[in-house]
Image 1 (cartoon, helix red, strand yellow):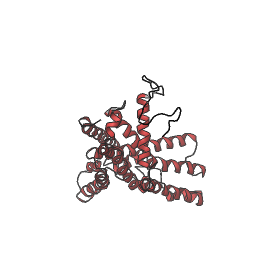
Image 2 (cartoon, one colour):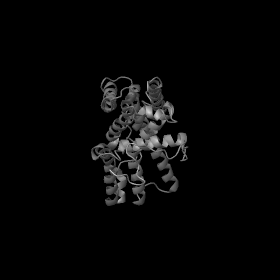
Image 3 (cartoon, rainbow, N blue to C red):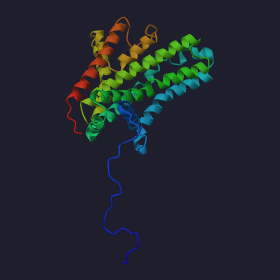
Image 4 (cartoon, helix red, strand yellow):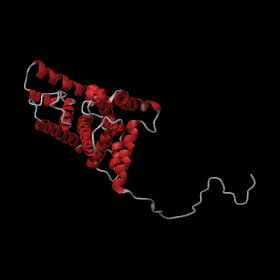
Length: 303
């Protein structure tokens, strides 16, 4: 083959520059790592950027949580105001009775997907090779889990509040509206934090997310059935109701909204005082956080 002027001979290499080039892009540090992890966790759990089959479960649960709210908003728009005020529409605390199943299904799906998958695939080591450490990693995962649960604990009652206000069936006056809004936010945090901690604690015990999901879905209604049988059928001490994991935050929500004395309460207030419910709630949170940290503190991680 004739030599072409300026052509590089085959199997030859040329060095055009020497030296080390410094990275001159933005350095986001700890905040950037935390933001990236939380954003990735939210997208991963919701199936964003993944095939359609990963979007089915989260989309179905979220839609199921909002369907009753949409139905009640339609009823409020069609019914006369006097009929809408006669108990045909649920209260903001009572609405959770319609979606509690969706909430613990979502908790059982989200937390294992975020925690178990990281340990099983080795992504946990990648996170810990960044400015994140174990406490900040767990904090980010807890924040992502809570944000996802707020989709189904805060969104529907907040949607009802806004719709009822526009339809003149909501709170009277600005001060009362702000009070109801604050109660809805506090209630959603009480429910979301409780379910998030329980689901994360179960997920910390295994790296198989299917096993963790099944355990969460069985533990929550199982605790409700056992405690109801022991108290209602065996006539044991009513303090055993505090071990009813799904109903404890629901009863607290009735107390927050001041509906415990109106017949809507799950338990008789004279049997379980409000302070015992708060003590049990904080106890679950503290025990769950302690168990999760104990599992991750000595966890062998390969980077």
